[in-house]
Amino acid sequence: MSAPNRYFELRDDMLFPDRWVLEQTGFDDQGRQSDVWQFTRGTPLELEGRPVLGIAHPGQALEFSLTAMGTPVVAQRVVSLFEPLGLQHEVQFIPALLEGRPEPYFLLNALRIIRCIDDARCEEVRRWEPMHGNPRRVGEYRNVVGLRVDPAKMEGAQVLRPWGWRGTLIVSERIKQVMEQAGITGTKFVEV
Image 1: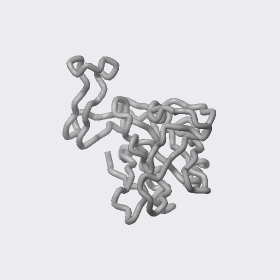
Image 2: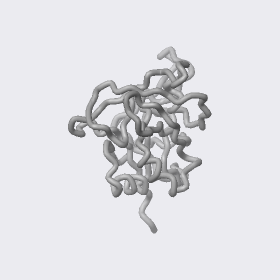
Image 3: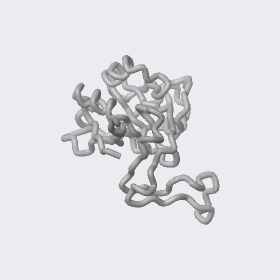
Image 4: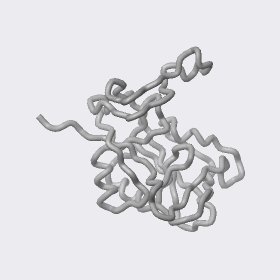
């Protein structure tokens, strides 16, 4: 019997020395307002303009960063690593404009949302209830501490967001290894 697949939350390495911090401006390069949350919905996007990103805190440029909204921002090298993996049904790379930087950057849009959180193995989970006054969120997670997923529910996914806790990006061990072997800067992997 083979060992179950391992999965990791892909986080921003906030301890990277002298690193930059990026922000979503909420506008595209045509000056139109854009929905900063659309990149966590798990749906393919067709945008008329490129989302504009700013540098909230100048510092060392990274190949992987998360904005405050949890949107992954990646350099061209990350896109080049993913292309031969055949993940076009799991991830979309959206060209972005990073103010003050000539090189290309992209928003990583994870296209799969999977009900995979293993409530019993998490340290703590709290869900939205009717009494919280947010009817469209009832049943989703309000808080998850010590996130754990059930690998049996992953459907072979390589890149995903967990249903009800979409601010989190999860990758397979395969993706972790590819990124680590390439030395992609800014990543932190936490097994879930």
